[in-house]
Image (tube, rainbow, N blue to C red; front, side, top):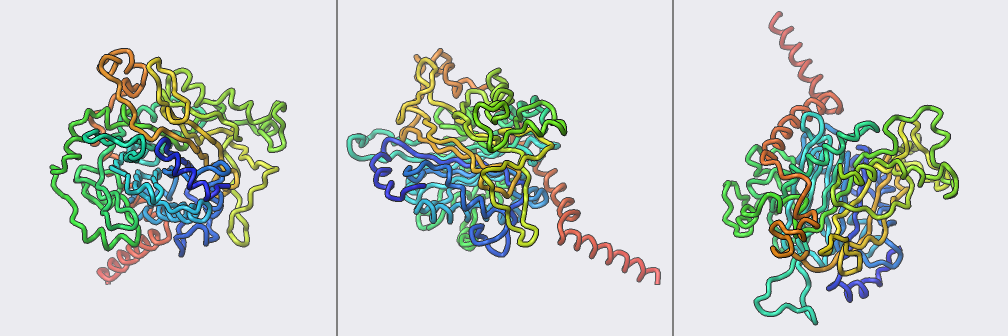
Length: 528
């Protein structure tokens, strides 16, 4: 698949392009941390994920500079809503699995530089170890749009800035400002059910109005792995239990870093003395959102758009796509693209405004039957000649990856390598069988230079040039109450998380039984 010798070719062109590999997967809460943190070594659900997740990288392609993992339903609701150290093992098992698989398959070391978790949704950003030193900043954000404003549905994001390599013909002149490539990655999980199209559109609006990226502290120069994620005092996206002031536990923490981070002073005042933090607060809220004029933006996740507004009838199963169908068959999976809600709603300007998607050439990613071996508990191996659909849902492309294109002065996307976003391979990973969703991946390139700002005479201050680029005229404005909404949803999450823990987990039920036994014993003792 990936040729490690492509490193030299990659380094030759690294000054012109950055290569990205984006992964999104709804894990259906099936990946459970066991005695080992390695999915590759365990027999638990999720092993097929790390064994196959890099299948989406083209043969002989260079290892990506940036690797992004978007997760939905990453953990059971009790642990996800409690957050912090309760959910860390679930996200950590994916982080470790991706790094181990990258080392084995790509022959490349990756460092986690950013993580954002809200409820059951997460996004983790890695960079090649050779790129780590060029990461200039990391910002995180999160929005809840589930039941009662909680995080069973919503979006989380990480934005990073990578400094452009200098040297050779492109070396900067003295006094010239250093260029930074800004990238934001949003993992989203929208409303389910075939008929809730408007609700999904509304969830998208909620995410745009509430996603505000806030700076987290950079790593220490001595750390061998990333210590990104010590949040500023006004950051509240780790879903930990650090109180309303947001100065909670680190967003990024591995077991090897616990001691180091616990001994590092954390800012607890509400006013930062950092000049970069000050400049960030002076920016308009719009510049800190998804549609920032200086940022390459990517949306990925279980967007839940279906291929029908109603559930299938029992007799509809005979027209579900089959692995053996030919493109000319009336039941071939491409026929379902004609009724794909995501495409239709985007074409009518009702969702994912301005975002584009590479051509879909892979089968629907949902809803598959999940099967485990009754004896070993391991995942049943994927059979490429048979698609096991659930009869209760229309096969659909619920899992998507979209990007905001770089446009010219006429508003047309730039598609040439080195000028715009260039999708190279967009596919699914059918070999992963631990969930009713298939992971979706996108390997692409972007220019290794800053996005040019539109000058005032070209539309940057209201002229036509800026209006052609949706970054300058986003579909929705940031809601000024974005932080209050998030804090209110977080408080509800804790209450529901505690209740779910006590009612649905073995330890929780044991605690309830112990308390009830103690109360009854006390009553009996008092009566006696």
